[in-house]
Length: 149
Image 1 (cartoon, rainbow, N blue to C red):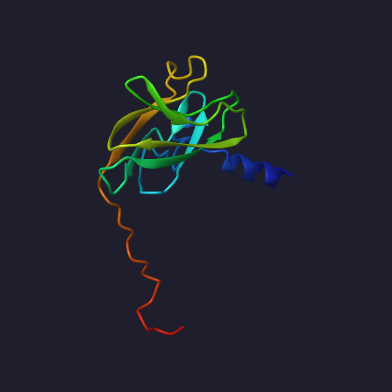
Image 2: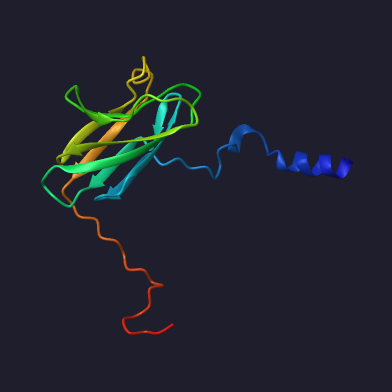
């Protein structure tokens, strides 16, 4: 038992200075056309906080997103521009997942939780839609044309 206690104590860490060492949150992510954006909702933030969508067109395009409520309160995610709501998820409780979409032209948009004062408490972010095209890199394991397995 003493050995187990000593091992567990050793795994307990060296103080709070490094408590987040090795844990990185994604503040900004970039996605391509037709790629759904996965968000996590916490009190009072979204992860990622900022998203860039390379739509590949100058025309409005459907932007899809999925929100997992990792918090202990109800949340939602809505896209707004100049105070106009352009689409979002319903309000839903902890441990649940909902999806939503908005048809957006290239430009800058605000992401926010519309529940109570959540946005005022920091539950917001940015969504930038560009006309850039995202090309997927070649898969190095795909082999060469005509190559047999």
